[in-house]
Structures are given as C-alpha cells and as structure tokens.
Length: 173
Image (cartoon, rainbow, N blue to C red; front, side, top):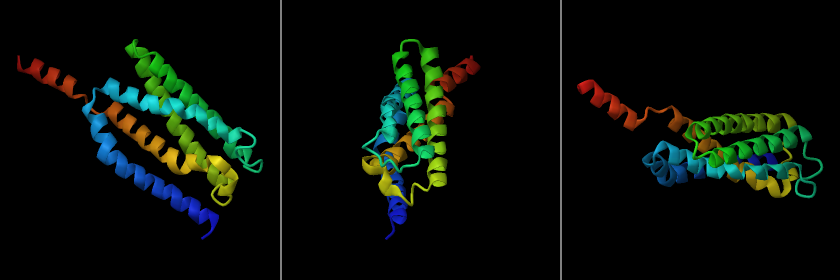
C-alpha cells in the first residue's frame, strides 16, 4: 500500500472512530448542557490548538515539508487556540465570551478547510512521512477538531429550549 493510500485511510478512519465516539459519548453530554457550558467545553479543547505551531518546528517535521502547508496551518491553529483561550478568559463577560466563541469557531473551521486545501496542493498525502511526529495531528486530532466545530455551529444556531419555553408561556398569557 502506498504512503498516500495509508495516509488517506488513516484520515478516513480517524473521522469514523471520532464520529462513533462523539455520537455515543460526547454529543449526548454536550446537548444536555446549557449552551454556555457546552461552548466552554469545546473552547477548552480548541485552546490547545497552539500546538499546531509544531508544523514549523525544525527537527519535528521534515525540512522538505512544504512551507505552503506548514506555515499557514501553524499560524491558523495558533490564532484559533488564542481565540479559544480568550473565550475562556472572557467567560464572566457573556457577550465577550460569545463573540470569541463565534470567532474561534469561524477562524478554526476556515483554518481546517485551508489546511486540507494546502495539503492537497502541496502533495502532503503523497509525502505523509515528511510530517514526522506531527503525522498524528491530521489523522487523529483534526477529525475531532472538525467534528467539534460542526457541533459548536449546530449548538450556536439551534433554537434555545429555554427561550422557546419563555416565548410559549408569554403567548399563553
């Protein structure tokens, strides 16, 4: 099997495994929480995205890893992690918290989309071995990050049960 095929299989299976785990354990837990608490849990996970800077750390990735992939991916992750940390720091000021929740999810989702685009353009799947120790990030970590961004957007956009009850009770009086 070619390195490209192994990488693509690892990536696909990373999504399958995380979707199975997320569906059974994480999603019911997040849906049962208040929106603030659920978003705070997701922000906590994404606050570790500063680790993406490893894509530009000499000695960890191959010097042959294309900069067109590594550099934007590293700084996109750093920006997302910083915004998630700001959301957590702003938890006592709810409007500021919600601003940073939306910001880190938008920046993070765009970062992941661009990382996939840049990886394909740079031929990263063909030369997956150049990722070195960071190989685990796209095949194990990125699927979880993508899934939690999807969950965060869903939770942000779904109608709030409490607000719906208040409106329903108000209309009865």
